[in-house]
Length: 128
Image (cartoon, rainbow, N blue to C red):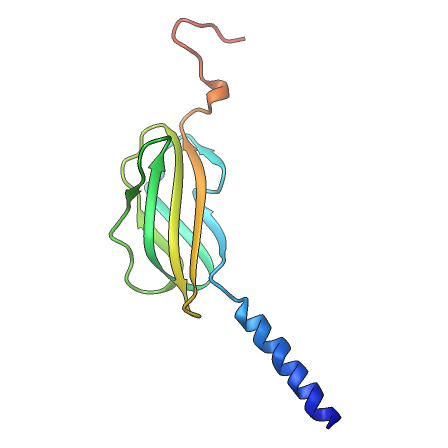
């Protein structure tokens, strides 16, 4: 009886660890919160397990979000999607991915293309 309890406990611990193994984002290019001088030509998302993107949108400043595509059709731990031509500004890249465990995982990251507002000077002004 004692062995049965131990086996049940081990099974529950193992099952709970598996339940939390979702497609977690490990790294991205561009990096979350980064400022890049040149606009990226691709968006690269690296997950902890193979995932399939179901939605990818890009929003610049206060403009409406626009869908990015086409998206890869196969699941992969590293997903690369061509970026549209980007003008200077602040962007939010948002996605929904489905992992091998069939859970939908949403996510987003922000990045800025061009100079940060703190380093931008108005025409005719002088630098400190």
